[in-house]
Amino acid sequence: MPNPKRRHSNQRTQSRRAHDALRKPALAECPNCHEPKVPHRVCPKCGQYKGREVIETAAE
Image (cartoon, rainbow, N blue to C red; front, side, top):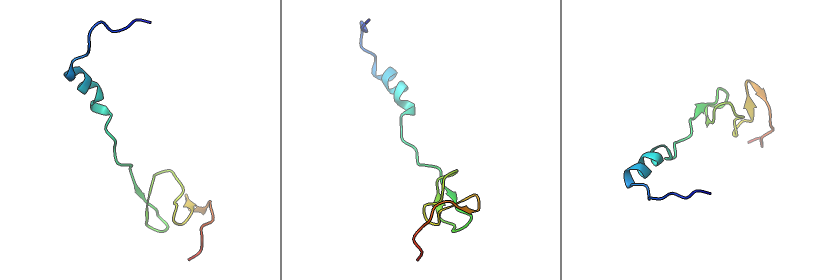
């Protein structure tokens, strides 16, 4: 396996890592209970997705 002959400069390393920062997850409002949830996923609060109950949640 070939090895690098010289080290990369700080600018080159930082330029490569410019897109590695973590981002906040995008949130959408649940149309049923109006709680924030991840888009295209079942709502963890009410258990509904696209107007149907997909998972059962504990009744309050």
